[in-house]
Structure formats: C-alpha cells, structure tokens
Image (cartoon, rainbow over all chains, first blue to last red; front, side, top):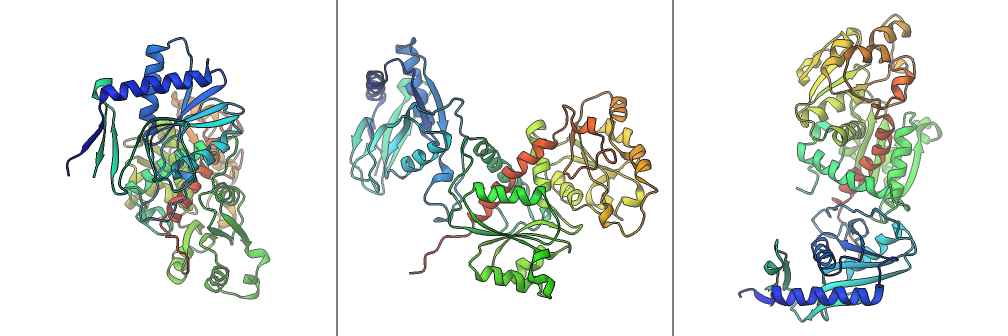
Length: 178
Length: 313
C-alpha cells in the first residue's frame, strides 16, 4: 500500500503557528517556563517550534533543552536490542519551573512516562505539560494525554507515522507507512 | 552496532574497536547522568550484583559500588578477609553459593591471573574483571583511554607513553591492548628489570631515557611501583628510581611542550610522580576517577542489557 500523506507543509505550518499561540496564551513571557524536546525525534520538532518563535515572536526569549529518557524506559532487557541512549542538554535549573515536554508523535504514552520520571532527576518542576504534533488516538497503553496537540489521527497498530522535516518549512511532511 | 560482542568483561583482549566506541559513547551519557542534581537512574532495579574483592582496593571498589548504585542495582559486598575462603572454600564454590542467592552479576578482583576467565567457564553468571593478578584490569584501561579520548578526541596516531612498573602492572597490559585497538602509538619507559620479556610483540616500543620519551608523547600514563608484588629487588632504591623515571617538573620543563598526565592511583608521591605534577593543570588524575564511575556504569549497563528479562509463569 502506498504511503498516505497526513499533513503537507502548509497544514504543518498552520499547526506550528497555532501551537505557538497556544503556548503564549498559557505561558505569556516564558519567564517561568522551559521547553524540552524529547530524544530522539522530538528534538527536530522543538527546533521548528523555536524557529516559529524566533520568526513571529522575536521578543520572547525561550529557554530550551533536549532530554533523553533511555535509562528510565520500562522495556530494558525486554527485547533483543540494546537501548541506545542519546545526549541530554539542559543548561538551566528546572526547579519550580513550568516544563513543556515536546515530542512529535504520541503513541503508547510509555515514552512520556519515562520522560516524566527522568525530569525528576533534575529537580521538581512546578508543572509538566506535553505538546505533541500528532496524537495517535486510542493507542494509549497508560493514561497520558497531551495538553497541546497538532492533529489527532486514527491508525492501525502496525502503521508507522513518519514525520519528515526538510531544511525549509515547505519541505515538511507527515505520512503513514503501512 | 549497539551491542557488545562479549557476555563478560574478562579483559580488553576479548574486545574489538566497536565495543570500545560503544562503551565510550554510553559512558559519555552516564557522565551527564552523574552530574545531575539526582545522580541515579532506575535501569538496573531488577539486577543484583556481587562485588567479590579478594585483594585490597579503595578506588575500584568504591567506583564499582557507586556505578552499581547509580544504575539502581542491588549490591552485596564480599571481601576475602571476612569470608569462608579462610575456611578453605574454593573460588568456584564460593561464587556458586552467592549465585544461588539469585545474584545476576559478579565483579571480581583476585590475585590470580585468569580467575575471571575460570569463573566465566564454571558459573552461570555475567563476570566483570576488576583486576586479576598481573594480567588485566580492563575497566581501568577503558577509563584511562576515555579520559584521553575526551581531551584528544581521536586517539588514532596519538603518541601515548606508559612509565613505571610494567612487569607487575595489569593496568599496563590492558592499556596497551586498548590503545592498540584505538590506533595510538604506545611507548614504554622503565628500568629494564621492570620490563616483561617479549613485550615488543604487543606492538609497543621501549625507551629507557624518560626525557626523550616524554618529548615524543602527547600523554603519559604514570604507573605505581608495586613494592607489594616484588619478590626480589628490581632497582636499588626509591630515590634512584625517582631520579631516573619519576615524573617531576624538572623533566617536564626540559621537553618544552604540554602533555597530558594520567595516573591510575594509588599515588606514591615523590616516587613515580611529584606532588606539583599531580596537581598541575595538565593532570587528568581526578578526571580519571570521575570517568571511572561513568565507564563502569556503561559496562554494567551494556552487559546487563544482554541478559534478557524473564518471568517464570
């Protein structure tokens, strides 16, 4: 079966702008808020969010970092594959801050659970929110929901949702691989 | 490859270049973990590790213990002085009894070369060699090379000098294997009485003039004179050794360049190295200690990930 395009670059651009406005609505000047992109793919999505902030709202200064949660995953030793870690970069304190976790696709929710446990090793945030580009509805294995969501889609279990980020905004595309 | 090629860490000799780069990559992530406000991850919460130390150790034992605790493992410590080994129990019996209490991994330090290999062949457990006699000390060599790698990046073509008591040193042998795998050039400098026979076959060169050797190198690893292992006299006295082979500011001034200085510890200040060199800006000695925990976390993590989880239903 051919790949089915879910969102083209125009729609992604509209979603990115909306998500940024929703963040501004809730976090105003971002003095007490930090954004964390989740490894491995959320780091590309957070880059796009930061690009929109820089382009459309240059006066807002955002603290951002990247978080790897490999060592907090619940499937260690459960598969043949060794879980390979990626880098983490958080150059600021998250103690008493509002943390927004950013990932591209929300599927089973297990990654988000691991990321939230991982956050605890840096301190106690005032709040944790979740922003995702795609929410694969009805596929959650644990009770996790996103606070900000680009689009909700229905998929079969074996489907893979791919998010491709191009060098320019017009090159971005999201499709389902069956 | 994201998997180690081995199921035990018995020595560097059994590793390949990919294993070392995987260990370094994983260690750099664990180094970030141990610099967090809360330095602990729950990854190994279902693993129990026994630290079996049949020889005295401060640094290595604490380093392994911290690595295990920071990975969330349960640990038990054992030292031969307070055990049934004194009552005549064999090594394999001792370990099999410990394993019967549902221990998953063994960290072994033992005065006999090959003891880790023996255990890996006769017990059903994952073995990590924390030093076996004058044979190998793989985790020390990996942390030494990791400290060099952080500073010099690629070790390919870099000149690394090892000065000291080579013949009694398991650190020297493991370091030679590691540096060879990473493509570094290795030179040894010591009194000829402390040089093992046929060492040149391990792709190393020898230089008895330390200043000349220091001029050649990018980094020097200084090894302790292991008096406790010497059954006879290998050189007249410490003062003479220090004058000829000890690392001091006078010798370093002569080479007119900056080189990195490593020492695996424990240090005999004033014998193989002077205090001002230990505390100089080019000294990586305390970095080595910090990296030791990260390297050991990486090794335990990578070996544990090869032990598949099973629940008896």
